Amino acid sequence: EDPMKLAEFEARIQRGEKIEPDDWMPELYRKQVIRMIEQHAHSEIIGALPEGTWITRAPGFRRKMALLAKVQDEVGHAQLLYSAAETLGKTREQMMLDLISGKSKYSNVFNYPTPTWADSTVISWLIDAGAIVNQMANARGSYGPYCRALERICAEESFHLKYGHDAVVYLATGSHKQRQMIQEALNRWWPPIMTFFGPADKISAHTEILMRWKVKMATNDECRQQFLDMYVPKVWEIGLTLPDPNLRKNEEGVWEYTEPDWEEFKQVINGNGPCNKERLAVRRQAEEKGAWVRRALLKPETTYVKPLA
Ligand code: BYC
Image (cartoon, rainbow, N blue to C red; front, top):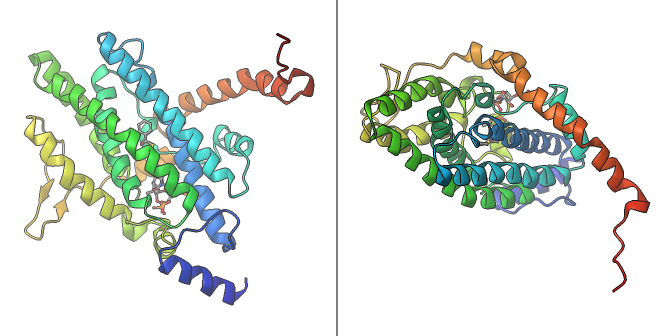
């Protein structure tokens, strides 16, 4: 690659300029940004499943409507993100094929089950909270289309956070049975939540180059720390506990915690989590069942003709 072009590219990034689809960029930048946006898009549509399964069983009409709207938003986020990734030359069809063949990754957390209503509320509150921490940082990044998508996603996600918090507080301040339900769901979800931000910086493969090119604006550990700082006090405030005896903020203001099980994380992101097969099976079925619609749309004779008045 031309060293002059690379130097100019890096200087633009240093000046805080946005890189747009037709601008020159190193091949590695293109590859890395596609990888990251694509994985993010997959996380949104797969992420719609563990909560989506609770739409019909959400307690009460009000919660059903709110959850329905939230899950619909997540699918919309996937649409925005697939469009952003497409600007770099990978087609949506290819991304979908790579998802259902197991080639592309998506967030590990959505490979865990939601056995109770309370589990879905923990996702709506704390996974969305984690997502906002990560996305608010990266919305200030270097790739224009990704940043613009993230801005809109964060705005919508802030409603999810309110909805999720409300649903968790309702259970946490309810009957003994409800409190027990939300505590157990939180205990189940805490280990996945701790790994949501990715592996510890010292073992993260891509952080260094992505930070240099301002695709990532905070490291995995920085996001994790910020999340703990913002949300652990809120969890404790409503009388819930977290299942980590080592969790505390030390004198330097840094959160200490038991190191997550990175071996389990590796298994889950490589297809061997509790629900990976089930999640991909749903997408595969959607792909197969929708194929005739896409074929029909591509045929010229099906073009919509306005009827004569
Ligand atoms: N899960 O070098 P590292 C949502 C992979 S959805 C799975 O640190 P990087 C929501 C990583 O891909 C929002 N895989 O990676 C939706 C890499 O593998 P490859 C989800 C993970 O990219 C519905 C390897 O591990 N948010 O909120 O520097 C309902 C090494 O890691 C994970 C996003 O997707 C993981 N957690 O940093 C409710 C944000 N972590 O590709 C809610 C966008 C790491 O070398 N993504 N890996 O095979 C990012 O910000 C970054 O990609 C990460 C990882 C911080 C996740």
